[in-house]
Length: 97
Image (cartoon, rainbow, N blue to C red):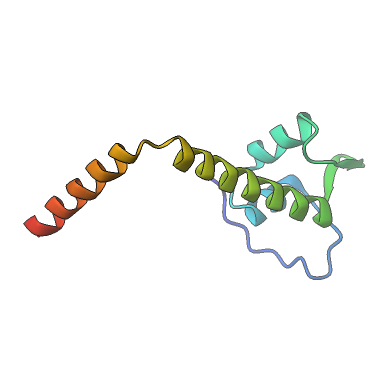
């Protein structure tokens, strides 16, 4: 589970992976995976890894669009009969309550 960190990024140009994870509501490990596969550019300053806030916001938007695209593909692939069955089940549950 992602560790909650309250950070102020208004004056920051770069953040460390744990702060990046908090900003994206994910874990530091997930951020490091994006760094390792090249999806999230970073730099090493001394012993710390730094991520530009602008790059982090670009990744956030990219992930948002990937999620929307995946959901849209699921809707397109959905059979109309499945929708009818889902609606019937939903009405049945509502009627019981």
